[in-house]
Image (cartoon, each protein chain N blue to C red):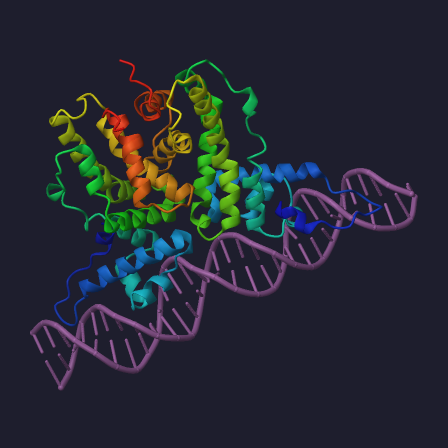
Length: 207
Length: 207
DNA sequence: GATATCCGAAACTCTCCAGTTTCGTATATG
DNA sequence: CATATACGAAACTGGAGAGTTTCGGATATC
């Protein structure tokens, strides 16, 4: 956490800094980032959306870039519990079970954050790491569970490249959203599974 | 072409505007766009890289955004001849034949342009169209030829979703470059073909 | 209830950059 | 060779936004 850079000695008297405002500001920062991208985002927008003063923001983060870094990183926390994933008994069933409106919305939000910071990733390894572990890795981790299970069941060959397969779905969704600017709907996701992911995983074609 | 907005009546006397400078400026704009992204790019950078004056740029384009629009669109022109593509007799052969350093470099450059303008695509349909037809469609068109040939040869089923398959390779490359920030090398592209594209196209696994 | 600190609001400074203007020079036309 | 125009360089204007400071009011500690 970049914010740790600003820790000050604890006062013994007077009002204490309200930690609840931290999260309000991070949430506001993410909203603005999603809507405007990094360059379009101003600290005034973030402050007013969080109903805070600009000074309150700068009392907690040293700069815009550090605020954004923390905001991106904080998307990681609210993530799925890997031990509570659907277990339908088949690879296709597991993958299809993940197609739910909240999951799609979360994915779109993460992609919009990614767009917003895209041009900085190359020059900012710290931000790139945060983005990877908060936006990309959680999705891959879910898929990893499903493919591992399928291997253990003998449903797919044990020598498939699991890492490659984990990123296949996200690649298709990202390309469709970022490049083609088309909506990601259930039909698209189902056809991805049936026409691309399952064949690549070595499952025989249904039909 | 946005530039057409600025056409003036032809003078009968005096020096003529040098059309060669147009291309120099567009090339410089692309270079800067690739290095700095849209927001990081300044007209001074473009002018000085083109060894031109700022005024010369504004004499030809009304604004930064119109210059960028033309620069993106002009990537389309220098593109491959679809009638002169390799024809090896097999789908795999054709796809592998496209893996050449110049082709990889061109792809990377296009992706960097895409990163640079990513955050504007949502609010700028004109730019989004230019990007689609200059950066995305040419790649898809090449693949379309290969898959059509494979269908005509009976190498793959006639009912596959050709459009989806055309975008599969580009999706994987884009995700690896933009999101994972990993290099695109021959090994990666070959494994894409063998492990993902060919299985999805309905070709039996080699091995 | 005195004190130290936090708060939101707003005014402020400073830098960067899009876009304009000016100027001295180069060059094509007639 | 006179004229009209394009050129590169550089000074200039205006607006936007990062980051700072100031203020009056709220609030927790002692």
